Structures are given as structure tokens and as C-alpha cells.
Image (tube, rainbow over all chains, first blue to last red; front, side, top):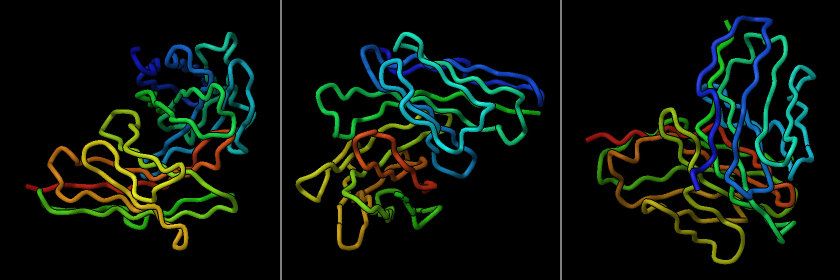
Length: 118
Length: 113
């Protein structure tokens, strides 16, 4: 078990460009979360998947953001037409709640992808 | 809606001194509470969690926290800190089910020699 991995670790882009981040969760974890963390603040929930189904999206997530988890394993987060306000650390976490639908699960976080929009 | 307030943005302390990082939450339902630590350029690592049962929860690295329902608090404590405890600490609350967490803005703990 190698933990949650994210790629790339750093991304610098120009305003208006599209970017895509990848998250590989811990194998066999059925839940996957995306959070955004800006300087001086805690992580903010963006969206989460249970298997391949995207079950919830934050109202913070504008229509420029899209996330997928096509086979219930890795996930991608795409930001279209990036803006300077998108600069942040994007964190992915995974967890397993098999058989405990109403119980909170321990989320294991990846190292994050730091996005800088110039 | 749930929310978390970490009452101190920065806590400087000398090595081997005790420390308390304060966290208050608000929620309309029963909650589950967590403390995470984040070292520079790393992801978050779970220190401890309260789900139910005993209100005193012990975690890794000698940390513990006490759930106080009447005061809606979940303060983190350590009796003697080390230089290596210097990091950002986040309190989080979950209402269960979906499992998503709401985080506070963090407390920077700086341990000085």
C-alpha cells in the first residue's frame, strides 16, 4: 500500500489555459474526495465519489471545474479557462466505508497538487 | 450547516512545555470530530478522531483531545512538545454518512528550543 498519490505535484499555467490533475487513491478504497486549500485556510470540500459515481459537488465548484472517476479507481480534476483565483493546493483523499454506510470514514490524504495561475 | 473555528491562528511554545490547541464547532446534528497535522509540502495526516464513547481520545505522537458536547469544543493537547511537532494543525467535523469534512483554518504550532 503506497498511499494516495497525486500528479503533478506542482503546476504553473497561464490564465485561460486548461489544467488536469490526477489522483490515485489507496487501492480498494471506494470513496475519493477532492479538496482545495488556499494559503492560510483549511481544506475546502469540492466533490466526492463513491466508486465511479459523483455523489456530491460543492457550490464552490464552478462549471469550469469537472471531476471524473471513470472506473472507480483513479480520478481526474480538470479546470478549464483557469483564473488567478484558482491558484491553490488541490488535495485528494480516499477512504473505505464498506458496510458502514452511516459511519464517517478515515480519509487518507495525498501530498496535493500546487497550482499557480499567472 | 456545520462549521469549525480554531481559536488561535498561531501558537508559539517552548520545547517540553505543554500545549493546547483550541477548536470549537457548530452543527445541528451529531458530529464526528478529527484533528489532522500537516507538515510543510505534505498532505494531511490524521492525529486522532472522536466518533462516540469516551470523550477523551488518544492519538498518535502523544496527542490527545477531549470532546465537550455542552461547550461544543474539541481541544487538542500534548503534555510535552518536541521541535518535531512544529506544523499546521487542523480541526475538522463530519456529520457522517457522506463522510466529507469541514475544516477549520488551522493553527500553526511553532516549538522553540
